[in-house]
Length: 389
Length: 232
Image 1: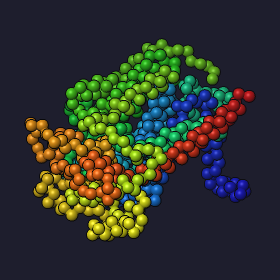
Image 2 (image 1 turned 120 degrees about the vertical axis):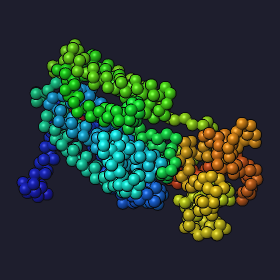
Image 3 (image 1 turned 90 degrees about the vertical axis):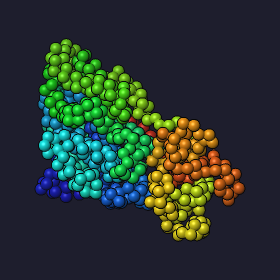
């Protein structure tokens, strides 16, 4: 067996490549638990793809059959309810770990030199994930699927001159309908594999310049590192087991908790739901969209609210990488995160009365983080960094 | 960092409760299917089925349910076939209402929704269905204008006339057919039609969680042992 592997590896070094990147790869030895969310995101992606492939064997992308086919999966396919709930709950958990992963990167300065390109790959992944999740939510063809699709695709109508044409082009008709559902299904199956590709680039970049670590220092000493296996495989397994406990609790005891009851009502183009809300993981950005009374500017603000992450490495001018040694940044970041929750909460509320005011204030707070960062990071007095681990 | 994590955890709990949306007040009932060890109770399903097939089906369909499904909750094939026969249908045929959608629209102003997954499609589930069915008061507010007054329905103006009345049907097992009894039985039945896997799911989930707890403990011990090598 060993000989055969060596023979194969000599011709296509896939085994030595895997050994180098998954076993011997050197990781800083001081990574804390916040560093487990990267591998968890990878596992969440695999769960989504596997459960998705099996769902695709039974799902029917047709406006007259889609809703029924989901019920068919839930009732008459062996283990269908597990696979379907796994996919629906899994999407939420994928976003949860990715948010934690991004938050960790923002706090410990993982976006800073020399990791800017790795950071970009991460933002591209986040965009691709949002597109995939959005299209996936349309597939059950419930009321929220339909009206969510309608609201989000309509955002493209703000594009000057060609907006209306772009929307018709996206729909494949003059309304959200059968062609829309069919192409969303095709793309929902395609984009995850593009995500896999970008994930490889993301990991490649991390391995090229090593992982950041809680001190943010560039580690040089050999003793500062440990091989990925068994140290981080063991640690990530602990992370995984805790993740699976929470995931399976939701999956088996409250699979519909994170969804919307209206999505168990078949799509009805002539009846608008009382208020249309996206899935929880889009709510903060949805709140920014609605906070601004002019639709065009709202759409632009929503786009910028994520795209601004691309320039974050240059907005933050502090020489110190880790938030651990930055007393003012630390509190700015805390306010930013708490405000993100406020945005999510207000995004779930109808856009009226006090909620409009709250959404405007927290939108302002959201952007002020990025606007203040260049100045604060320049003048902030940082604490001395630890030299050794 | 610890302080930040703590604040986040607190805010997470806070925001989770804030996300729970509010509608009309729906009183919580006791449901035996909420118990972890529960099985679908054949006699309750039978009573709920009686209400569903003698009252509800006059207007509403149950398109994902056939008599064969009753075999999953303790009915024998002979029983299920006999029940289908009394309704002039076949064991594999879905339970469909004879009311034409267009006729329904003429009489009630809207098409009555399919009830198969209604408990999942309404905030409050079985509690909501129970509240609607028992929500037709004898005295309606004088300033009410609309089709029918219902205490649980959003806006109170509901297209469905009061479907239940005292002794509307006769239960085979002799249970008195009060409005509350019928509402409870049919809401229970609808929970089953909405989530036939519900009780199986929770039982399997318990085993899965026990397994995962053991797995987590082992993973923690292995992890400690491996990292202890570094301290030597």
